[in-house]
Length: 298
Figure 1: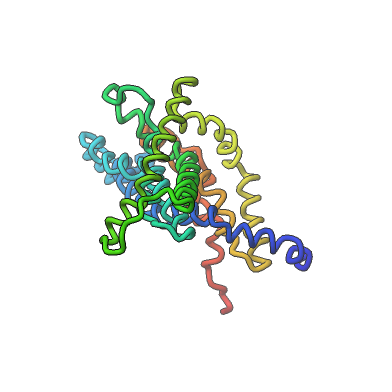
Figure 2 (figure 1 turned 90 degrees about the vertical axis):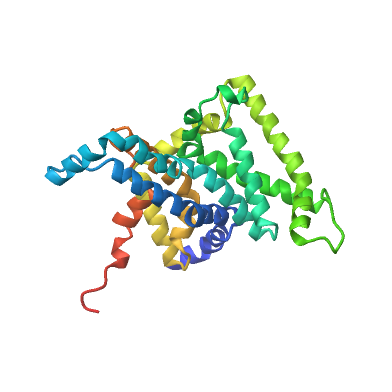
């Protein structure tokens, strides 16, 4: 069986593991989003003590923070709640490094393009920021990833075709970076705005809202026993043939895991029950823990 797996699966799955887009997605979550998520989660825990545990100190804690709960949730809303915005920068940045491009400029372009799609194309003074915040977090992850890839590839194409301002050799490097990215910014951001405007004009919804509706069945399907079991088995098979199973599976599954995690956080924040089980912490706490336990006879 191992011979068959090595002969038939190692090469295609190895290519998947080395896919630059999947690697950029993985790096965006692990390197860029994870510190933001952990920081926001700390404040969420502080603002929502486990009152189901019958302990006097927890009841006292809950009573003490009740008057300032909204203030305690402020860092959560502007860290965990901006997860997709962070991921959009991370995808553009990570992909640009692999494309040998200006990573910072690509990350900024991806982030601005995603930020533009989260707002309805109306008078912004009439749009409450709180109504947009959820799409800058977990509910905007799919659009953040898609735009991070598309805008970076569009920027690479334009630069490759010479759509840049090239400066003389004596110009400082930071000035050259600015002018090299100027035309891609001036072409890509208006194009994203026109697409966002067309979607809003025809459907009365933003791009993240439309994409979330399309992906919601997949998100729901990923939160099941069979989906979790399939991911675990695939990880083990990959490890058995010499491929880093977690890297391959997580590159594809991260958007689904983090969407569930964000929905859990929103539910806890609202005082409801968290129903998303298949998340990244689920795998680390309940499926990978056996790897960390030493053998008793060693």
